[in-house]
Image 1 (cartoon, rainbow over the protein chains, first blue to last red):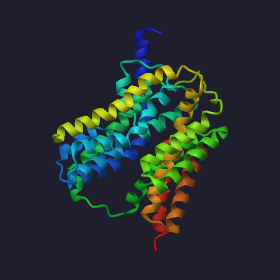
Image 2 (image 1 turned 135 degrees about the vertical axis):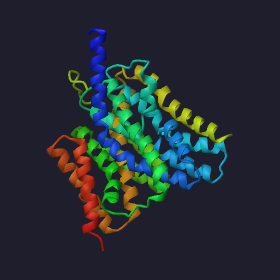
Image 3 (image 1 turned 30 degrees about the vertical axis):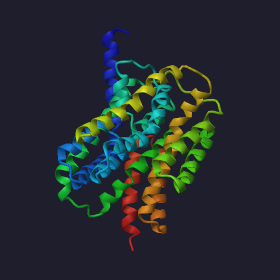
Image 4 (image 1 turned 60 degrees about the horizontal axis):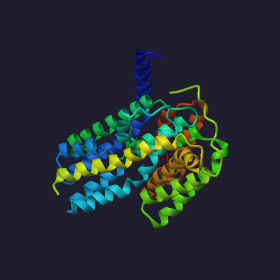
Length: 242
Length: 108
């Protein structure tokens, strides 16, 4: 393939990834909005809230970060909490790499920056049936990032004076992320993989009795993957690529 | 530490946690051993763990049978639509819509 053809193909994959990020963005926007509102209520200026979303881009740990800073915790304490909460991301990159058609080194930093829980889950669900183009992953992450930063800006700018009425839309938005994960599970589901799902879900549920959610999730994820590693990987079509 | 240095360090730390393993993962991805199978199963395991985490958050907001019914109806709607049309976005939105509407029907 000529360089031009490669560029056109990458551009198409990127646009497809951006389009596929819509459901993810719908789930992200309300959470980012809440983050903007909470940050301003915690005493940050709107641009400080947006700066955190721009630079950190790590959902739950941003909420913890703002709460700890507002409580007057020291810098190293805040940093330790953020790092501990995001340790599970250590495993995302290698897992994603197993599904990529290639890993251009110049794209790796951008792919890594956008590798949140939701982007990873969406990419792995798609990647269960076909190899992923790096440009598609970039498009997906870009859509999620725009929704995250945009939602934060909106929440920080106008959210402080906006009170949720707990109405139909607000309640529906509460379920967007669980619904997205369920749809992704249904998409990635293979009958032979049920032990992975059962062990991961069971270990997470059990872990939540003793540990905070992010630790329980890490334990559940590793337990499920350990069960999966004892079985051969299901075949993945090499012809079709997104 | 200043406010800015905390935010920049948090961003850098999060980035490195994601970036450094991604580089080594490119080598691991070529393998066929235990580690490669482990990484291959990690995506599905993470999705399952995220479902449990996000659903239990919602459950504990209102731990009542009505909350359980709403969650079940929303989940059923997602799975039904995903089965009929392989469209993740549509399944997500219909599931969220059913969950929101169920809140109105099941209100005391």
